[in-house]
Image 1 (cartoon, rainbow, N blue to C red):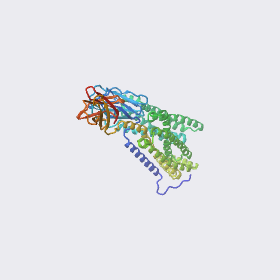
Image 2: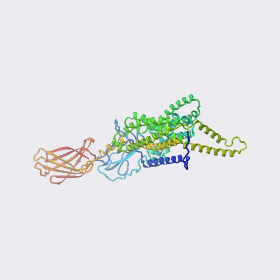
Image 3: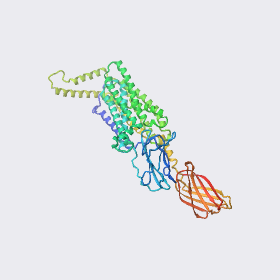
Image 4: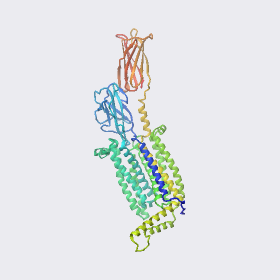
Amino acid sequence: MTATAPHPGASPIRRPFTAAALAAALVSLVFGLLLAGAGPASAHAALTGSDPQDGAVVATAPKEVTLTFSEAIAVGDGSIRVLDPSSKRADTGAEPKDLSDGSTVRYGVELHSGLPDGTYTVAWKAISADSHPISGAFTFSIGAPSETTVALPSEEVGGGPVGTVYGIARYAAYAGFTLLVGGAAFVLGCWPRGASVRPVQRLVVRGWVTLTAATLVMLLLRNPYTGSGKFADAFDLDGLQAVLDTKPGAALVSRLLLLGAAALFIAVLFGTYARREDAVEKKDLTFGLAVGGGVVAAGIAATWAMSEHASTGIQAGIAMPVDVLHLLAVAAWLGGLVALLVALYRTPHIGSDAVRRFSRVAFGSVLVLAATGIYQSWRQVGSWSALTGTRYGQLLILKVALIAVLLAVAWFSRRWTGRLTDAAPGEAGKDGEAAEEAADPVGTAGDVDPARAAQLARQQAVLTATKKKRIRDADPERSGLRRSVLAEAAIAVVLLAVTTVLTSTEPGRTEVEAKGASTAPSAPAAGPVNLSMPFDTGGRNGKGTVRIDIDPGRTGSNELHVWVDGSDGKPMDVPELKVALTLEAQEIGPLPVVPDRLAEGHWSASGVQIPMAGEWKLDVTVRTSDIDQVTIDKNVKIG
């Protein structure tokens, strides 16, 4: 390859490292912004309903409180607590009962009998089926609302310093998996000579170390992350045992076991495989390592698929293997890209064939990502409104945009790859001669001081490396390829960070469903309710009309006014008037109301409590004489 002299005054040695430093600064900034902007992990499961409902006022104390969720959850002692106005436990303290029926996920706790009137607080926390902790609180009142002394923690479960460290470990785990799998695949599938190259070896080993360390941190912090939020509880043996009994805990332990097998794979890849010279034996060993490494990589990817978003929701049986393919494609593309970047910057003679083979691998990975990504997007988003109106959908749009930018940069890399040529054999010979000179810079002279000889050897090695680097950096095709691959790698790291945030964000489909379920009962139609009902007691002057106003006509306290008009349209006094309210759908009532007479034909009652919204039946009893009485009713929607 013809070398082109560098531009005068340029520093071919420092320029690549400056570009790498700028890329590293960009990556650090993006990770910092993502971590700073991320609160406690949103989760797949969400509270979709409760009985009593949030803000409801019930006439009598319920026997139990039930909570309904959008997805399966894991609960334990203290997962649902009911606190009275003085912050004392109003529930019996027993483990929540599983009241689920079919696809409906519902849990309940029994309450003590004889609870006094007042406002009660329901505080709950659980583990979503996709491994994320969830929590919340709401209130309801018995009889009438009251002051309460309950002080709930201001910090949500999964937050605080423990949540921050756990989140960093999650990012590191994905990054380590990408480097481990992608780097190893790059060596086996694209550049077998890279197995003996020290910088590539270090890249893969560091990926293994990062993934292993992050997995251990997540396993130890799992108990405080989902519970107390205190670092000291990381070494609580009882808590650790409880974590091992959960699906996320089992997934983390399985990952550690598979990483043990991955360590053996790395030892063979960079040991026996790198030293093997015979072509037939090396081909057989390549096949064996590819099969074994593929099984281990798929197993590690499955530890995410079986414990996070793919494991719950619709079509979980299809979503989990699709998620495994998606993760493997990400690792093969992005991890291989980093390995290629290292090879281009740290090794002088990676061949054009290796670069072209990786280009084909990257293209295949993009096709797999497109197919699996479309399915995952449909499954997790579900509608155009969720795509633009939820955080998950907005992050997904950002991810697609980053992929588009990455593909555009990759197009330039493919152009540089097409121009790339290998070094001439003579150049390799010169490199060998230079290496020999570095090993014996003083020839065969035996009277040279050994310390001086070692110093000269080091100097010669530095000069040789500098010369090789200057020639390599002056190659316009290889330099252009390095720059474009560096840009790809920087974008790829940002893309990986966004993908990691997506895995801890509540999918758009369930967020929309949860919002719809939670807002439907709590969106009262404010405004007075006006009714007019004719009556006939059957006696003398027994015909007339009852007019009723309920203001404001929603849950909580209301004003009730009743007017009774005779058949002539004038106000009519009656000996007795009673009103009762019944919510038959929830088996609430009848709730009696005895209004006070204000004037001729006009009665009213203050503070009439409507405990929850729904289709209420209004019964009005009118007595016009000692023996003539009638009860009339009418259904009315309140709230």
